[in-house]
Amino acid sequence: MRVGQTRGVHHGYERPSGKAVAVTVTKLGLVMAVSILAASLAGSLTADAQLNRKVHRIGYLSSVGGPSSTLSHLREAFRQGLRELGWVEGQNIVIEYRNAEGRSDRLPDLAAELVRLKADVIVASETSATAAAKNSTGTIPIVMINVSDPDGTGLIVGLARPGGNVTGLTNIAPELYRKRLELVKETIGNVRRVAILSNPANPVHALLIQEVKGVAPSQGVQLQFLEARGPSEFDGAFAAMAKERVGALLVVSDGLFTLHRARLAELAARSRLPAVYNAREYVEAGGLMSYGPSFSDQWRRAATYVDKILKGAKPADLPVERPTKFELVINLKTAKALGLTIPSSLLVRADQIIE
Image (cartoon, rainbow, N blue to C red; front, side):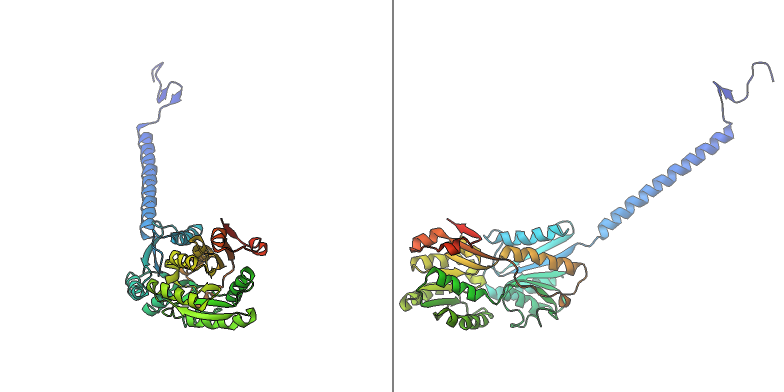
């Protein structure tokens, strides 16, 4: 080798031979190819997982309360309960809303429609909607809300073990009508005759009337029973109350009455008749007073049943819940218009006072 000649040395380092360079490039290419392939497979698996992730279909059947109604806050309470448990519309659930708009005769067709859509679970508010859903399917799980006496009406076998495809929440607590009559007596101490307004088209009202009859003697009042199948019969019912000179009114829980609660409050005010209802929505519409379960709480709690069912639980094994949250709501503006002074003992117990 000549003086000054070097082999594979350049600027202080040894230049690899052509063979070494080829091997290095080949290894680098292999590593890059493997990385690209791994990334591609990961992306493909992620995409497949997203495509294969089940989006559950929830049917929502209601006798009253469309999206634009003043009861839309109940649907929002239900959706909020679902979101708290990780179920979000448009992501992992789709909710099919069906509303009978106060016409109970439409419920069977609407329930059958939800069955044809192959809902994974049907949420039904009130007794008539739950009955329609149960008559339409014996396999799709049904979560009931605000249902009176579900075992007495045959919707379930028992509260502890429902036994079929229906579970959820009942609005019945043994003390409710006794408490409402006590409110009447506390507000109007000398009342002797109390009217009870019910809807004979509601299958559960006969049972509720028996409950009212059972507690009336202990309150020292006589009861006058009046019926209304629709708003066209409201005027006649209130005319009969005036004729009988009743001192107060109890309105039995019913979807039809809820839908027309502002009209009932107006007729009670015109008749100068103190009325007690089952829910705050009546008082917010101008009624005097309400005592009963919190509807918003029931709708929110219904989401826990949906969550358990979508995760594999069977309705037959999920006990039916009684109300746990009750609220007393008083409308002082209405009381003033009726010439009533609400006792301070009631005001301090009220959950909300509307002035």
